[in-house]
Length: 228
Ligand SMILES: Nc1nc2c(ncn2[C@@H]2O[C@H](COP(=O)(O)OP(=O)(O)O)[C@@H](O)[C@H]2O)c(=O)[nH]1
Ligand SMILES: [Mg+2]
Image (cartoon, rainbow, N blue to C red):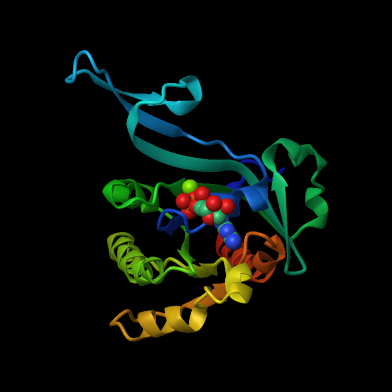
C-alpha cells in the first residue's frame, strides 16, 4: 500500500581508509561493490580499458575507481524508533504498525584525491551526507572542511539544506593513544568560516551500536520531511 516508497539519497564522503565501506558493511552486511581498474596492456601502451575487478583477476592494474552502492534498504520508524530492513524482506513488514517508511540509496564513492569528481557526482541530489574521518589521522580530519564546502555548494545549487552527520571514526584506538577525538575535529571546523550546525559523533566500526543514536535522529528527521 505504501509502494512506491519515498526514496532518499544518502552519500558518504571521507578520505580513503577512514572506514566508509566498513561502516556500510557493519550496518547492512554484504554490499554491492563496483571496483573498476584501469588495465594497461604491456604490448600496446595506448590500449587502455576499464574492467570491473569482480570479473577479472589481472594483477597489473594501475588505477582503481570504486563506487559502492547500497540500494536495497528500507528505513521504518515507529514511535521515533528506527528499524532498518532489506528491500527483499519488505513482505515481512507490517505497514499498518509503523509510522513511516522510506527507501534509502547509499553511495560510497572512492575517497582518493584523484577521484574527487566521483564524490561530486555522488553528492548531487543527496538528502543526507555522512562525512567520515579517520580519527587517528589529522589530515583526514582537516578534509572535513573540504567536504562541508562541497555540501554547501550543492545546497546553493539545489536551494535547500542538506543535513550532515560527521563521524570521527576508529574511536576504539583511543586506548592505544592514537585517537585524536572529536575535540580536535571541532576545533578545525569551528575555527573556519563554515557557518552551520554540525554534530560530531565518535564512532567505531567495531561496535555498530554507536550509530544507533545519530541514525535514529537523522532518519526520524528524514521521515518527517518525507511526510510533510
Ligand atoms: N580500528 C579500526 N579500524 C577500522 C575502523 N573502520 C575501518 N577500519 C579499518 O580501516 C581500513 C580502511 O577501512 P575502509 O572501510 O576500507 O575505508 P574506506 O576507504 O573509507 O572505505 C580497513 O583496514 C578497516 O579494517 C574502525 O572503526 N576501527
Ligand atoms: Mg571504501
